[in-house]
Length: 232
Image (tube, rainbow, N blue to C red):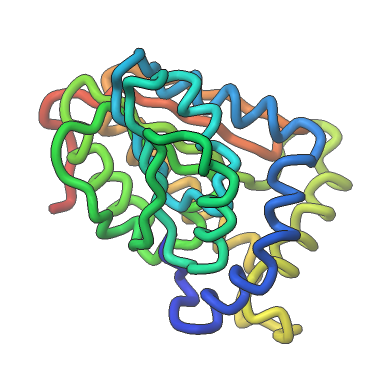
């Protein structure tokens, strides 16, 4: 991933909390099912190549590997060293899963890529819509791009859910010692997620939209079309 806070603050933050983050990423009720659904939305077939942008500790990688089989290729990209070490540990049994240190906005990947997955990533990017453009260009026509992100819920039970969500966003925004922000982090996050998902819809000729986990998580999968909008 590439954090909008950038620099050592973000790297130190995610590196310090790698193991706790991994526990939350794998054990939170509803999240494993979401990860399986996100992998399915990539519409992968045996032998395909899939890239996960901002793979974190690798919680999605086994689900992607299930989809492409032993003859396919799974590549995870993240910018934080300790997080990637955890991902390597947890995927060491797979010889077709590679974990690479890099920036999701300038992924060190070329060649045939069938799908890109990014979960809980675009809210940390300076230009999330631009990143989605790049990912759509990477997979090309008929490839798939899937985004899953947490944002405020619009459901009738939203107020208490959104209060918890806002607290989580504030606590998970590096640096953690900062108690006041010039604007609300959860509103910035919402705006970035809206921009990214809207751009994916613009670039796709077939789109599936879903909500999960009390309406807080939005999942959008798109089959990229020929041409389409691009800011580049």
